[in-house]
Length: 632
Image (cartoon, rainbow, N blue to C red; front, side, top):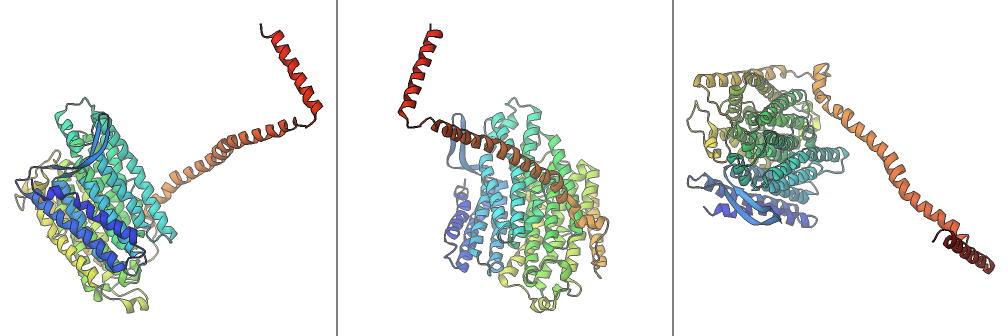
């Protein structure tokens, strides 16, 4: 056992310290210092995470290592320690969170420099990273749940960061409420594990699953798996709980990159991959995961085709890519899903930060109809954005090609029908991403003269993270080469000890080459089609299906009609009849009765001695009568 795994507590501790310093002193601290503190704490965490990663990668590593910090809950037979688990899965996520997180922090120092609340913003960002690290490091479901709730809170704070805008605060509330719906599922699943297995520790729970010592029925496995999946649909924006994520674009662009590309939305994938041993015993729920994932990938991709807000296109793209990850989980390819999490973190963070660079140059404009020809003035942003588009479209050599191809190959071995639908989603991905690229960077400028005059390349604090992410988006896929290219798949062999794939099938080399050829061919055709359609862009008003897609299949309106408005009507009825007339009526009625009785009794106090003697004699007569007639 090396030294770094015992220092794992420092990884979340540094961002927590950064949050406390910036959070307590944000009104008095200079902006530059706040940014430096925010960046240094994440960099320190990244350095330790790097040490942990290489220690875990060492063949002599005997994992997982449980680092016990203190006793958390101890009541009767229930014992839940505050412990961290260091293994291949958690160490990989540590690198993604702290590595991409650091680049986004550096980018934010320039992007948020003119904002009054910049130091407060960095404190929220640090708290978010702390919560996310807690989520992936926890050695039991309760610690994971604390981090799970923490990222939900931070997303609320960051999405609604510019809280003076009512639309932004509504978007933050929407994210918070929809996440709470999913979190209830996670909580119920966690309680079912506790009741059925008597533990929340991953190691104890999985050892009981493998040994089969507990008398638990298949339906219990299914219910636990389903409840945890409901939790994942909330956090990872799957149907029906996906509508919060596009609205979350209200937050600053680096927030979109951090929360909605690299980290928070992948929490659901991490949780299901971590609980793979359970899902292998609940194949029925795995089918549900695959179908929901594929449906989400298709629906989000269709919506992205007709969006004009640069960040909304990327938001629906994120929802679609998360659908691909759940599709991989649903066919039991857990390591493939985690591989796509990693490559997606690189190219989606790159695309979001690239869009931020464009918005920065355009003076806050996000409508791609008012852009065009930006490549002439923003060469670095254009080239890095192109790398991101090529990666997400699955063009050979770029990271997305390797991970998406592996997902589609695994899906093909399970169901050619699901594979065919997956290919359609991949085609749409290539189309809408290059539609976005051509409308933004090619052609002639369509904005105002003032915007054109101010167009310029972003400063180094923005372009350097873009360049680093572009390199990672190109090179990141080579850790997971397919079998036909290399016998050694580095990421699969690395994750093998922590994550066991379910029902693996191996493809013949010819079949695999054919599948690769199909996915590349359709992507290239879609890129050419996107180029030809958008050479002379036509922004006429959409009609028919195009209008439905522009309005996001009217899902928000549907939820409003069948959930929000009926709930509001029910709330008004309960408020009027139960709250005001019922509960308030009883409480106020008691008060009025006492007051009325007091008013009447007060009349007996006349102050006349004769009246008091009369009452006294009357009382004696009544008492004598009672004793004579009733008491024997």
